Amino acid sequence: MAGHNKWSKVKHIKGAADAKRGKIFSKLSKEITLAAKAGGGSPDMNARLRTAILSAKAQNMPNDTIDRAVKKGTGEIEGAAIEEIIYEGYGPGGVAFMVEVATDNRNRSAQDMRTTFSKNNGTFADAGSVAYMFQRRGEIRIDMPAFNEEQVTELALESGADDITSDEEDWILYTTMEQLFTVGAALKEKSVTTKTQKLIYLPSTTLLIEDPDVARQLVRLYDALDDYDDTQNVFANFELSDQAAAALE
Image (cartoon, rainbow, N blue to C red; front, side, top):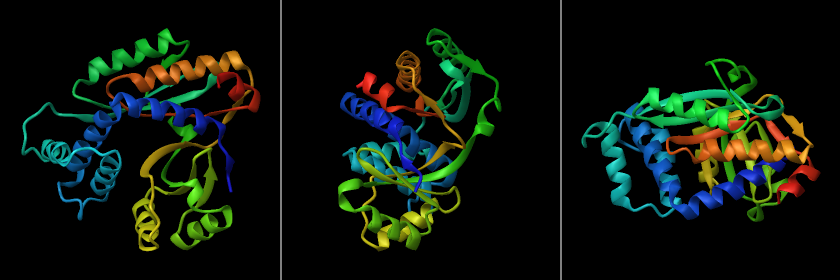
């Protein structure tokens, strides 16, 4: 078991705030569009699209909004062409950041990312500068109260997951990039309800941040990157000490 992840708690607090603002609908719509564009509009034949639609339904997104996003991806509805771009950079303390963006204007997004890093004590970096510090992995989240540690460990082993960790709310199962949807399907066969199922960038090693001031600067940068309209996901290679986490709370 990988252990408790204190930074995940901060991310969940931020995620809850995003949901309240309704921003989550925009992110989910773009993910559905990108998934349909990449693999076609049939959820049965497109595992990424199937996962995106399940995530959207879990957030009570209306079916017509989902259908519209799919049709934008397949070209049945005209709209600006959206592409996926990964931007990289550094934050205070040498922390590495990777930002997944879905945009219809890569020049604008690049400039906006550069400005966001600069205004928040960070440094925009060239492609490949920090990517080697992360691994592309599958992540599946399960509501923590539903299972104890022994039960979720058994589920992970039987379903083919590689590792388990947890935060304040979820059990988190990690898979290889290729096995994400296979493991998700195995869990479904066991009648396990998953909260989210997606590909992430998982840091190979993490920096432990103990200084509350540095922690505040990092969270401020994370928030600014995540609040950008075209951002889909933000990944960073740090976790917070108990002292730093307590100062943020």
